[in-house]
Length: 449
Image (cartoon, rainbow, N blue to C red; front, side):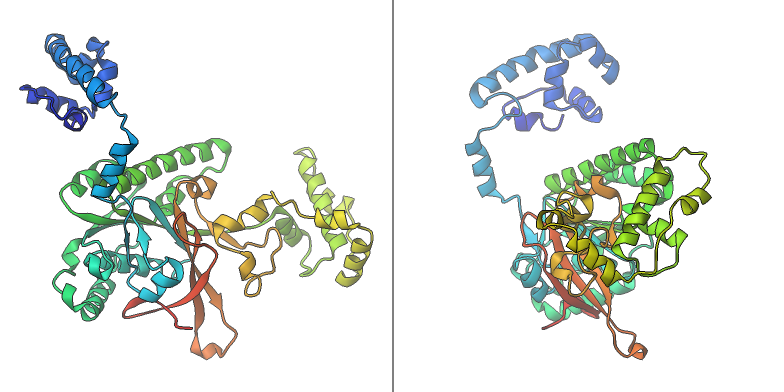
């Protein structure tokens, strides 16, 4: 009921106790307008007498009619009013990642966007938590130095927040931004740990919104979204996936609402999962051959499809007995014979452009066409990895940032590798570009080219 004075600015009532009751029941002005005809149901819900509710509605409906005539129906605003509000205080803001080169290369010189959900996805120990901790410090900077002068909330579902790394980054930022030395502090980073999915939902829906109203929150971090869902959802059937998908949608809805109401950035870490094709699994079970010709792959695919269409009581050994795969011919011989038998149209139609394996490169971050020189050549099914929580969660985030780790052929005694970061998709920045980064005492920094 707290929005009644924003909907009806001139509304006055002496019964503040009744208004508090409406607030405790999470009733908004629009809800009361729809419940005015069922006073008995509202009386049971609020545990107030029907007499005082009818008395309230008599004056409330008059105010609604007056407000609708002067300002339009409840919840509807003109575009001019929206434009004036956007000029008063811009909804969309950005803050720096803490490294100016990284901001310029990937984020158009702006940084992380507020008012939406940003996902950080990558393998374990690639630098995601360090980057999230760095954002908790950079959001405290003044707007002149690229920050929001806001506090950060760090919600952990896994190993917790590294206070040693946090203090190290604060010291580094104080040395780099002398005019913000007093502004940067660990007291402005608020930590909460979630032991299970139920506690996580309670914190996001009730505790966090109440706490955010008392602070100038610029950043909310959830590290990570996949931990409790993977631990508590064991089913893999359609019904289990349906339940998990619904809960993910509810969590994403809460996070988006927090981002809009607090005008802050919501950054969520996510794990990755390996991708396997059914043919690859069957190939590994039937033969240990590392290279198969095109004809062999076709024979294996036909055998797999025949096995899947067979009755459930069909013995597994019949798969090997019913199909004989020839491994004697070379790959080059089979490829030349197959291409010679195909016309140009058949060769162009070999891969369906709407196939999931082809389309997934645009939102997983793996096996982009620009990565073909450094990773596996672009072939359907060769993505290798994808973000956890499936397509449902991918549709809930506004932008995805991927962290990768690649092996460099060099002296193994040095134990070095190459780490890259890139924007997979975003409504604000160009996607598809990867830059190399390193982690030192100053946090995550782009490696100068």
